[in-house]
Structure formats: structure tokens, C-alpha cells
Image 1: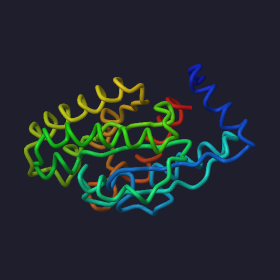
Image 2: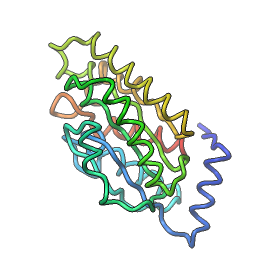
Image 3: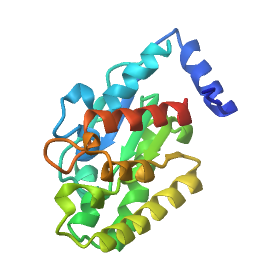
Image 4: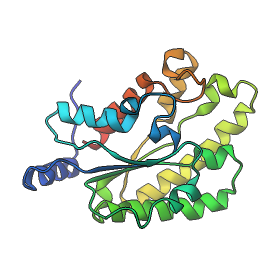
Length: 216
């Protein structure tokens, strides 16, 4: 299948190559989905993205990952500054599932997610085109959720993802929708890790491929 590159993406890649052929500095922000809980670190989607890019002759360093299982937007905010410098060529953000799971206020998310997005842009050399945000996966399809209110989970995640997409559009940030593909786990158990909740290596690879195609 032929992958279409946007003019912006081409310009960004050309810019990266023109900078003394330095490798792309990649910062991945989030929670368990970014940390790769229940799989080897190198099987997480950020590491698999790096592998894909390097195979395509787009030199990319191993990702710097600031993410932990259970983190909400508040937790991520508290673990960012002043540890990081605004010098990354690519910054990813995937956050919010634990806000939903823990029943945090939606108003809190409406306040903190845009703040995290602005911080991500700053860390990406103040260039919104260097930032990629992934939608929150639908964990209602996992075995872990079999005794949960699945309709409630789906409805709440829909609201969260609408907020995420809107804020990305307002800032011109790349938004990658992975929620629909995450539902493939309902009919393909191989896409779920051994903990019955988190994605497997195979699922993360699907995400990484979509990010690479849509952004690069």
C-alpha cells in the first residue's frame, strides 16, 4: 500500500535530515499504554515506532519515556518540569484513561489536558507539528472489563477522546485515532497482554505503524 505523506510531514523530515543528519530525539509522555506495561520495554509502541523509522532510513534515537502505570493527567503534570529541555524533534502524548477509570472530574481533564498539550508543544521546540497525540484505547473490550459497565466506559471514553481531538485541532497538533483499532482485541485475544488488560506486542505494533504512516 502506498503511504501518502503530507507536505508538512515531508518538510519536517527534510528539516530533521538537514540538521547535520542528527537522529530524531523522541519523547513519549503518558501512562501504562506508553510505558508498555505487561510487555518488554522494547515491545512498547514508542520503541516499535523507532524501529519502524530506522528501517525507513529515518534515524531516530531510542525514546525518552516519561510514563507510569496508573498515571492521570495530574500525575504526568507533576513528573514533567523541570526534568526536560525543549529540544525534542518528536513528542508523543497518550493520557486520560486513568482519569476515566478512577472517576476523576471531567472538568479536571478539560483543564489539565490542554496544559499538557501546550507543554508538549514547548518540549517539541515550540512546533505543534512535532507533536503527536494518540486517542485513548477502549479497554471495555478486554477480559479485565468483563464485570464492568461497558456502555459507561465506551460513553466516557468517547467524551474524553472528543476533548482530546478538539484540543489537537485547535493547536494544529497531529491526532492519531487508535480507539477503533483497539476494539479488534474483542475478537483477537492475541492483541491483549497476559494481564488481561493491556495491549500485547502485536497491538502496540499496529499503533506504531499507524503513527508512522499518519505522521511520517
